Image (cartoon, rainbow, N blue to C red; front, side, top):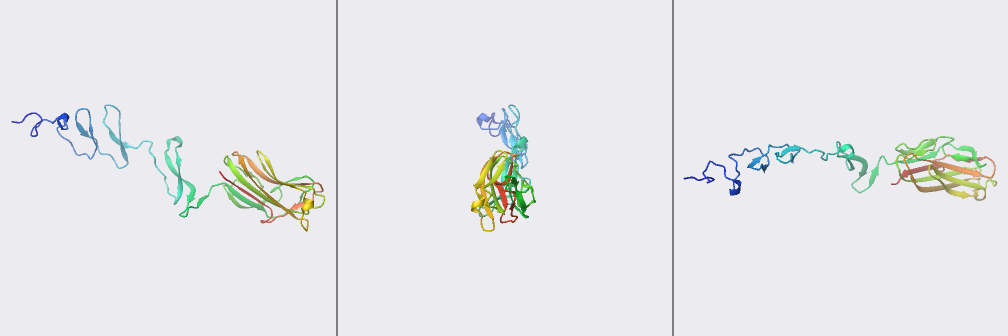
Length: 255
């Protein structure tokens, strides 16, 4: 004769005696859990869902991963992914930074520029007048990644950071009476002097003189940088030679 919880009994076997305390269990391909009385199974979830607690006294269910990480909507070969958590989007985005198979890194939006004076500006300084590169003939732009530089000779920092700039000027008609030359890179926050010499004493044959300078400086987003030549001591007869390899400027965001 069968007794309660015997193997041939129709009464559910208690959990304490190794049973489920359930009269039946349906195959739902779900997860088995204890509801406080018996073992039951959840409904089946989809491939993209996760098992989620609904709080004390409520059965767990499969639900979409709330606030989960997704990413990127499109794929760029060898691009570095960046984390975008703004507004709870929780998304990995493609960036413009790429690392190729040999480890070389490029970034097509990193601010960088180079330009040169293609046509000479004549009689622009010599009497102390400040000549701004690009204020006469427009500059010819070779590189302007980020479009932060103008043909009028002004670079505007798009982001706060550390920048590197370089400048070369080739002077014509330098006379013996021209006693002071200043080559300058002027930013919103400072003026950097790269040369302070007596041009009349060091001019080359034909009254030519070339000078160059470079700086590394901090800039705040919106700050500007310009490139200047000041010669004093005599008359305003000095010209700036227009040539890609003679008078030029450039720069880029370092970090």
